Length: 130
Length: 135
Image 1 (cartoon, each protein chain N blue to C red):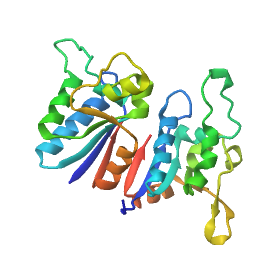
Image 2 (cartoon, each protein chain N blue to C red; image 1 turned 135 degrees about the horizontal axis):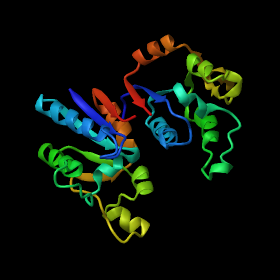
Image 3 (cartoon, rainbow over the protein chains, first blue to last red; image 1 turned 90 degrees about the vertical axis):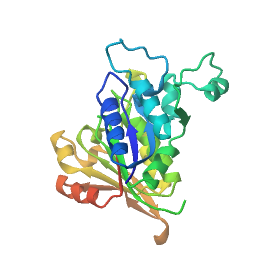
Image 4 (cartoon, rainbow over the protein chains, first blue to last red; image 1 turned 30 degrees about the horizontal axis):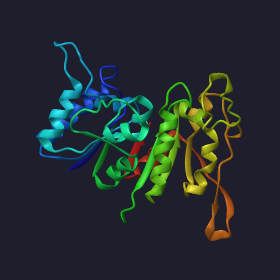
């Protein structure tokens, strides 16, 4: 089955980020396909490479990057949500005159149309959030 | 893109306090551009999103409630409001904005967009959908 996963909550604050990861991993292990993972609302904070959790805790961002790269998953941060919350890649830094970037490897920033397309193209859209 | 699916956006949270309602509305407007069969549903505190006469001047936030009145122009004509959620909050349809759409096939006759449904009926609406977005 082909899934699109929507993650609405930030890492560490809310278990949704963990649940979405475990779901994605389990689905891939069962041979399913993940068309896209779309990060929305505070979920965009899953894509900052500047996170530094304590060493004895899970690194949620690094975990996404690893999973995404291992399975070539399209991981998208919503641009409107990212701009509000300060998630920046090279293109956004240039467009909005910012002096830094913080997007983690394996993520890209794009529009809400990517979420709608995920709903159209996938067999199931799974939303993780409140 | 030729595929058309039935999209239902579930709105369950108060309009202010968290950003879910506002960012949900942003997805709704984008989805209309993809020419999908889009419906909205309001339940729990989400029914407050449609209350008329909202004034956000005291909290310094944008009042985005006028946007709901534009949904008809985006050809979003099915807006389900859960009866029990209204009643539990002491609200009636009269407390909500009067949302309408213009039916091109009937000489642009104005029709009501809001459909008051029971919790059980809303379950039936959900069962008809291809994609459920929950905000």
